[in-house]
Amino acid sequence: MTAPALPETPLLDKANDLPLLERTQQWAAVNSGTTNLDGLKTVAGFLADAFSVLPGKIALVDPAPVDAVRPDGSLYEVQRGQHLYGAIRPDAPVRILLTGHMDTVFAADHPFQDMKWLEEGVLNGPGVADMKGGLSVMLGALQLLEQSEYASRIGYDIMINSDEEVGSASSAALIEQCARGKVAALTYEPALPDGTLAGERGGSGNFSIIFTGKSAHAGRNPDEGRNALVAAADMALQLKALHREGLSVNPAKIDGGGPNNAVPDHAILRVNFRPKSLEDQAEAQEALDNLVAVIASGHDLDVRCHGSFGRPPKPIDPQALKLFQLVQSCGADLGLDIDWRGTGGVCDGNNIAACGVPVVDTMGVRGGAIHSSDEFLVTDSLAERTRLSALTIMRIAAKGGL
Image 1 (cartoon, one colour):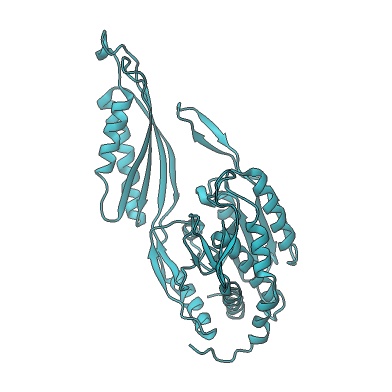
Image 2: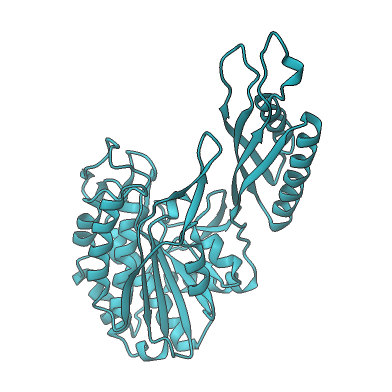
């Protein structure tokens, strides 16, 4: 597709002069797995310095408390890194939200730590696509916006969290706060290698179900015991029976058990739900609540459920469709064929959409094989996607909304 001449073209061409690749490489050179607090601190510092070129307040904010269930059933507080938050022109009549994440799935001791060129223009490395390249694109687009005549017409919040890869529990409240009053949101997860965007997304819920029974000798008085392991297995089977089109149910792990000569009095079932729609989510929650009571009664023991649907399903409603079509139109003006399709994956776009804000959540680089040692970034897409985001934001500013 040949792009027509645009009045914004001279400004958008400045994307080629931005250090998009250099800062992507700097950020990706530091391991920032979600549990690597030292690495996250270093990357957060890099980001705070880089985003400080924008005309607003940029700050690092502490994560909200998050607890999790140990294998023995006790709760403990999970440690997370700080999140980056920025507010630029908070009193502007039109305001949008831009989000991303600084964490990766690669822990500090993971063997995948280094970058290498697979071929000219294709960089392999941890987080280069998901999403340190996307963060560079986000900043680049805002740098172009701030040089444009449209800057004074639009304000925006920036939120870059440290825990997206594990469900954003310590940043969910911050996301909700940032989404208030916004006409649209852009999130910088990677697009597919051909540039296709993620459209509607299913949801996700993670639960730890704790079973507390009664120990007894397996030979002398087994009937006096209450077998927590059997109850957990029973519940796993009954939960799996809920699996259907529109609702994936995956009992993933049982912690518990003990020596062969003792009735186990403790077990924990870990399970993931993937509802396609809000109706599917409501059905899953109701079924889970009912099963907790049924299993507790049927096995005469205590059953407690810890967890939630942290990622609600993200449909494409009329406002979201307008935003997708705007991105598509901007792409056409830049000579890009932009399309979208549904996906079973989840991200912070799910949380933003649940706040009633239309969002396109794959405005980042073109790349692929994310969450694996084969992850790659198509480096030409850094400037390409920077221009696409910048033009999209300028059009929102010019129109005063969608």
